[in-house]
Length: 410
Image 1 (cartoon, rainbow, N blue to C red):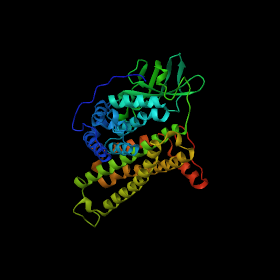
Image 2: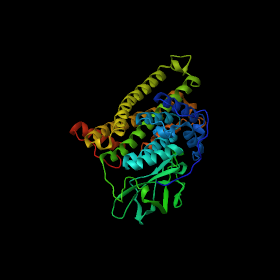
Image 3: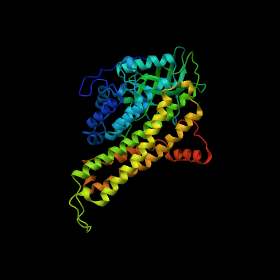
Image 4: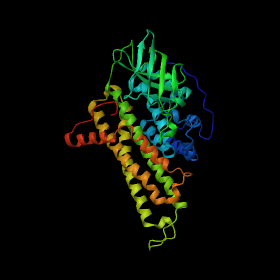
């Protein structure tokens, strides 16, 4: 693997490594509280989140999945997904970056050799390195030319979430014979350029703009899973796409939960009761329509949470099991439930993020509050791939007993 340098995290109120699952979740809530303080203002400014990534590093959350022997938490994926959800309640952008970091930190597990796994996990955990990635499969592949001991990469990717603020970047490319490569490079490598063209309505702090590689030289050892320039595929490889989809699903639930919690605080403290309905109340919290709406919000999100938590555990079991033991059938059973969970939380989450204004009142639309960021974030990222195809997968399973087949989005 290539080496990189980075500033060591400095101590703060969130320093030290948690030692239990409950402590990791508490740490995530503490991180969310920090991010929530200025989340609306940072969304307006749209600046690269260098400071916020530093906070994630200092908190220890970056090395949650890393081996304990090198200072990591050696926690499970079910915990990592819950942490991603918790951070997303305060800031969907940082929740996405942290979830994607966990995904790429597991890249050598998905694709690599045992030796690569040991080396890469020790490196990123020991040095508290943060990952970004540029792998959009709908783009033309970055070309990789074999130059003996090294590879020369040229081309670009339209989305490089987090790479600008990361230490390491995961890239996909292809050799001239069509074989695909997955490489991990230093994010500040000569030949890697960031085009600073992320200007979308939501997830503004993810720095998901395009990236260009121009004569980027990497050693063959950076090609994950290749031994003597050959690779042996396994079913476990395809769990990477399921993990990505479940990171998204937990992030969406977190955003919706954050919207509901923020709205509830506003309703309790600032919303006024309606004086012209013939059923006057002293407080907005006594209004029947407001109570009914919050009851609806809570019920919908609890239902989504129950399904998502179940699937988190199922996928976590696969990810932490023997790689060679994963079958297409077992993978497919988990995949269809991830699709069900994703379509459910998108539908319910968008409704919650939109309807909160009905129970807060007209003054809640003031720009100073930034409550619209929850809807914008969820709406923007939920277009990552058409949710209709997730519904179709669940439908085919229900009607025909067909399991989803592995693809770049399933």
